[in-house]
Length: 123
Image 1 (cartoon, rainbow, N blue to C red):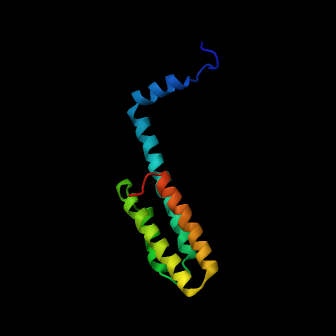
Image 2: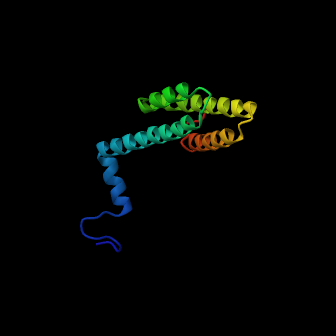
Image 3: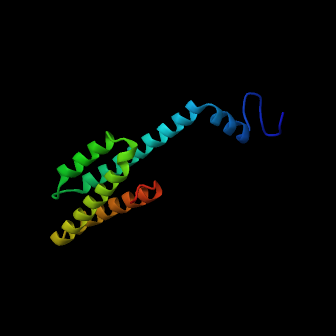
């Protein structure tokens, strides 16, 4: 037995080969990743929705519902739509002189932008 392995466990290399050989396991991992992306985007759009006090809260709420029903191929477009809403919200708050709303919206927008970039959803 190789050092650092116990009975019933695999080394990293052996586990990788076993996962590749079992295509269904790889598919499950990919599905979980897609579910994570949808879930995280939904949470971030939800934070943006909470910050939309006067400006288009219905549109952002509807966007969140669309994100939750989205397939993997739709995420990039929906993330771009969320960023566009965030931009509109921030500008509307600045024009209204609502600094508290602007800070909340800018914080949500930054988190959304960071996630979109890290998840490679940015176009």
